[in-house]
Length: 357
Image (cartoon, rainbow, N blue to C red):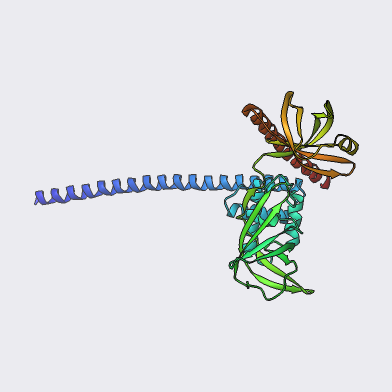
């Protein structure tokens, strides 16, 4: 009997101890979970607070550009949807256009004027000739080109109008019947002055008739193929150039002004009376001397083309012989000059933004 009582007592004791251990384990788990939840909650609160201040900083920056709270909200919301830095929409056109594309896709009833105003305030409404196009929205009104159909036929076209979704290309002197219709794939090619040849692949959205003229409605695209117009780097310049050549057996040194420079040639202008006096014609060889960045250059050159401009005549000169180091020096100069032009362009728009405040 005593043995059975002892067994019962021992069993009860073990049960109590196991229960105590279990309770202690539960307390530890509860404490650990509470701490973990607190940390997660605190990090989330910290993130929300940080996001709140970040958003305020973005809105403050957007207001400097003249954007309204409604316009800033569009950029903030859709930049975050695309996981892009909202601040980049204020500085980089490509980022801005991607975000606006997302906004227009999700909001079919968007206001074109709001987006136009945003683009204008940020200085994204126009591009200088030396900056390549990013999207078909950047194509200038009245840009001419060719539209090619799948059958290989081409049509002369000019950009008649554009909005945030579509381009409207006027068919120049073309009338029905056409060898294309709504839904057909077409290719648009055009030459942008001082830039390159662009090709766009898209699909005919509609064919419109307006006052006896026919307009092809095409969706905007971001994918644009660009081929640089020239193989040589080229930029507009303004510095003195000395032309040395023979005329009637006498060596002549003629002062001229450079108007553009490439890695393989130079365009210079002289007064009309000097051109008439010395009769410099295509094919004439001259020695070209000039200085850039405190470095002197001298190249034997030939005149490739001639054109008149107001009260002066300009010659397109091709450098006949160049040393590799001279060509590299000129290319580096052109690249730096282009970068400086971009800085000046941004600075000008920055000033115009400040004036609008």
